[in-house]
Image (cartoon, rainbow, N blue to C red; front, top):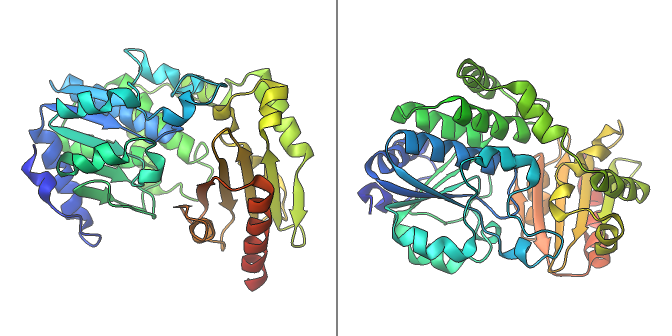
Length: 350
């Protein structure tokens, strides 16, 4: 066990937390890196880059993605969406069933791009039992108590930015493959550097990864030009049901289980669909409710001035001020009604 991982996270001690995570990684010889369930490009890219760089530095590194929810969904058996499979040409991450075995043989468990047990499906009890050797690297404002040491930096555009800075401080080799993974992480979380979280820190990091061999055209094609026709049909059904409220400032969309069945689309193919509503110039808040076999997932997006992390927080969720989410087992239509009321109240205040 890394002795630095016994340090309790101090929210005001960002630099101290960074250095503690770096020290843990430097000391550990065997590392397990994992990200959240229903993973996105930031979590997967950050994990892939850390694994590649760690192995190049002589470490033994395992990767894992919680797959309990996805494997209970008949639409998909893969924890990694196909558009991100290029990040794992040397082998796909393990699943939930492998966690205890891999964690017990590892000196350090690193959780990237989340600090919420709710996003680590099926792993809460096992993580709590090993908390003394769990470190967290996350950029979300809504933080839990997952690790004994946590570097939480909500000013970072993506977890990939933070992982890149850690690897730089460690001096671990970042080859073209790792650079592409980091670029994919940040590009996906900034909407290809279009969202408000894009900042000089992220752009400087991206420039460095280009210098190390990241192929931007290939990354863009694999992430944003890799759709199946089924996804476009799903988008069509979603947009056909788009509803506008509050003087067209609130856009609400739904995707039901029947939409997946009729189109043949997978659950992971809903990623980024919520952004379609923000094409409308009047829309200040967009909401997408996705009905799945075991829950309803709700995503929020907003323009400047509306804190959707606070809105999601009313329902037990969280995230960023401009992008957040939640899950519930309540009926979709009942949840939709509650969310419309909450969003309307917020919009009427401004």
